[in-house]
Length: 168
Image 1 (tube, rainbow, N blue to C red):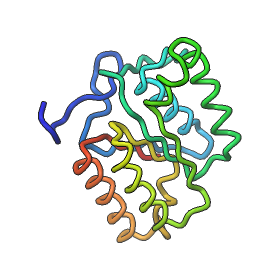
Image 2: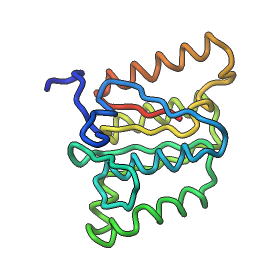
Image 3: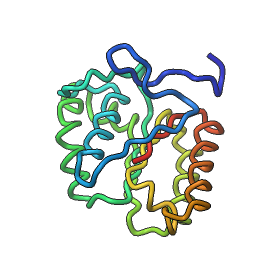
Image 4: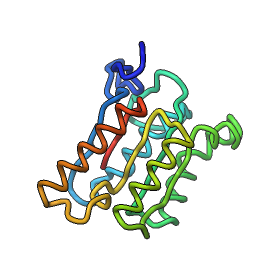
């Protein structure tokens, strides 16, 4: 398929669930494991042999940019170690690290977060971007104008960079 066409990146039991050029959302109550689900999708994206009850598979080895504005660095490291330790053992740290970039942006303003994401998209050229804490990309997520502006920004990123965005 050509650029900006719906190319599947992740599948669930053979059904395309994450495609290029689209913004996908994960929502739910506080502490309902949205971040854990996002990490599971990330590990499927970089094609690691993770032990998941989900049947999510990648269509190819993907380059994933994981952006977190909520979790503590310790929590992120602990979860990544749990998910990636077997992959690092099987494939080597270099193979895993060339497919994954993790950015912790909890100390930045919404404008700075957007600037850092834009810089990283150009440098990293990911296939899949996972943003855990998308509400932190706006001053007031409850403001309809700001929310629409953020959604449009994410859509533009997905199309312009020919990637999929998963927003939590």
